[in-house]
Length: 303
Image (cartoon, rainbow, N blue to C red; front, side, top):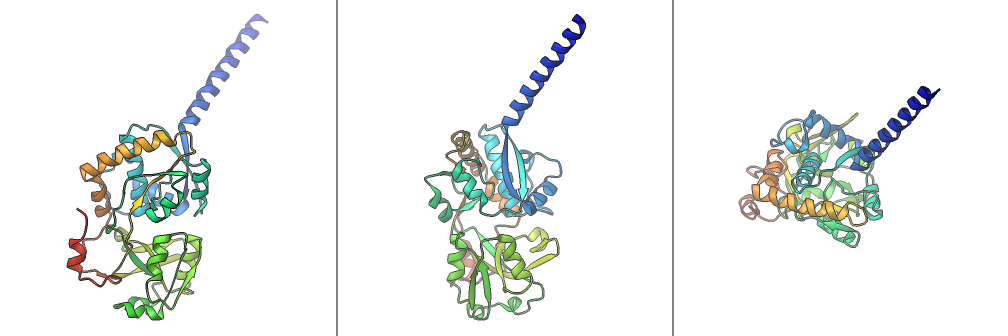
């Protein structure tokens, strides 16, 4: 009987210690909400490597969202923030903003336009520039079967075209509103935008360049292709945002800022986006929404 009691006490003690350790481990892991297509490319690009070990940002599966995710984690790591992240995957869009405002999400690994971030300034910390003003060029993505979009050469050609975006992306919406479009449709859901363009209900949408993928966006049965050598300048900077209401918010922001400064001084941030092909060299491309020559635009880049 005494042996049974002793064994029971040992078992209970082990159970308590094990569960305490599990609880501590769980507390160290921070949930991050991420769109399923971004998570797919992120995990396939990493291929088992740790984000802080990435120095080459070229290759298949790389895209702006993936570079953002890796740079954010590298900066946090360099700044001394050593908690791990677990990913909650789904077809999300603006849910992240609501979670950040409530303090239920620490950080958005998808960077924000400054115009969007500053509207949340009472609820989030805004990081230093990740992509600087003058560096962000988008592709004009359309269905491969939409021939009239591929004939774009002049601003006046937009007169016959329709586009889709959301006013909640202030910089995108403002940029598209300045074009002489036949129609600009408001749609908040990213996947719905993609489907509308794929089915040719809408002629085109703006998306980050994906040269490593042939500037082609593929999602299940959806395929969108960028118009070759035609770019749109989105004249704003991009930043990470961290919730002020999250218990780790202040600590994470301090670490992020420190890490971003280190990466910027090393030239690692610009190098990453250039290797990924996201910041183009502007050798042959037409920036269709600028009344300037390519050479003048290139000289205006921040170095």
